[in-house]
Length: 313
Image 1 (cartoon, one colour):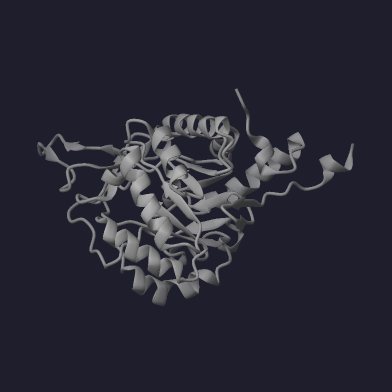
Image 2: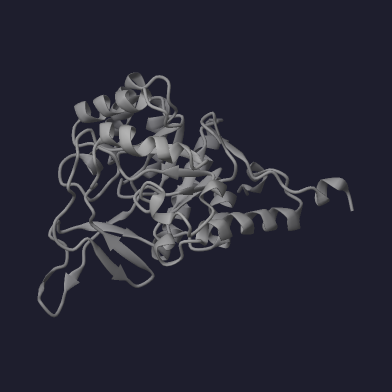
């Protein structure tokens, strides 16, 4: 057997200039600020951590029910509860940086001014990357609207790119857009260094016994294994479109990953890394298993780099 097949594969990846020790990232809104999972898995072994969604000013989040279980998934209506960017930088970021993985700040807002001011603060901080969230379906004002069409998505991307010239910008795309690929390509032309997709799908739930909507905010975000085939299709189509344009912009895929095989599907579809989210609620150690599973798959098949996994039409 040749030495190339016996040598352990290199799981490290580079996303927008930021090196991750492996392609597995804790998804925003599902991992808190890290401390919630200490002792439950090897946090230092993760590739990256996406923070809870951050806004310029503190938010209390949505009132009423916030979580609702569905077949093969869950719905959430958290509403971006967070302490505000300044408090995050002062109180949370120093401890997060000591954990080891790359720290990706998820930035959201209701107005362009909030996005711009927030990105300036993050640009001057020690975060490794900004994930520009233009797709959150849980906030009544702004949020999702910016990611629904190419023009508005490009506009906010351009503004944040200008306000945060030092940090890589990864734009998180909404699956609720009529044409996700068009939105992604527009963001790339506007200066995005990477793209992540998908966020949750807009959905509603009704309490049949009490004859009322479950969520006070009416709609909520659907995540979990039920959305994975659709998310996978969107990642594949965007990857093909970027390749056709010979664009080097990397994709981070997510949506319903619950095991190593699920993550591998996204890597084969063209993503260079993945984010694992709601599955960690039921299985806190899942991401460590996903990392190990990717490594085993690559070793068994003789792959030396994660980027070699991608399949093409």
